[in-house]
Image 1 (spheres, rainbow, N blue to C red):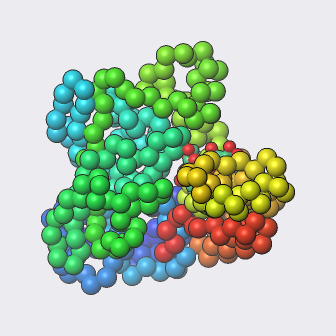
Image 2: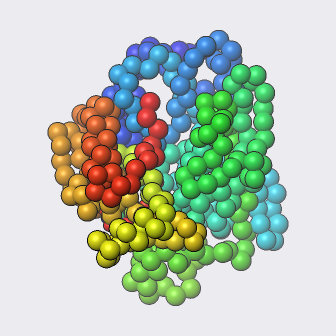
Image 3: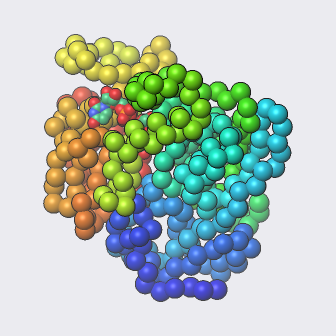
Length: 335
Ligand code: EPU
């Protein structure tokens, strides 16, 4: 086993936090992963590092998951089943799908992170969630080292949520994911406002999956900071869901409050709007701040400590609660 000592995790998390791994090992096969787990009582699993905020200065043992492989399992005239190892980069996989003309993930272009993390928080963007294409998730159970298969229905997918964030949190390691994609008759999702606008600006009336992917990439690039330039973890909070009654009260004061109906009794409010109303959009506080083009993204302008970012997030939560009586739930994992 090639265990390295005192490794900085700065290049391995998109927030760019300089936390130290006392011991660090990269594993490239499931066998290696099993070996390490057998000999290590406690460890932290690091994948793409894109949805994590390190607030601890030191992490005793880090296993960096680097399982690779993308395999077509079954191809028919209508659809295709693809098995992808957890350590494959999400966006590279999406581009691979576009190249092979496999549809279903084009709206999820340019999301940072690895394939193995995609089911955990059920990544979503521009009207599509990854749960729409996942057939099954393969895992290694940490306590028994047994392999498990979770069918889509067993994953308890919800908005930025799954069983792997709830009762199975920290109990299983996702090793691969099987997706069902379309090989023709793609179901295109262009309803999300900004996609429609981007396509019509280019005069595209009959978009291909590549056109949609390109549109999503340009929208994301215009709104979201590139983590290699400005550290961030994407949306820091979830969009809150409130009761329709609560919403109606808020609407009396804030006539233009944006909202999406979830059910008759529930309404989802964009957290970015709440944060902008509270005056945080574009602010800079020491090494941290709120992105100037998307208030849901908290950024590291340089050498921020994780704790400084968390303090800013907590301040935002307090003010939003006072102003709107809404509790913002943090979406990134705080370690
Ligand atoms: N808004 C503002 N000010 C802002 C940002 C947003 O007023 O600074 C309002 C606007 O009304 C806007 C609405 O919020 O129309 C929605 O904004 P946007 O389309 O940017 O989406 P979002 O709800 O803020 C969610 C996801 C993003 C995903 C986008 C696009 C969550 C927590 N975030 O953001 O996901 O890319 O939709 O589908 O659901 C991520 O999870 O890391 C992420 C980036």
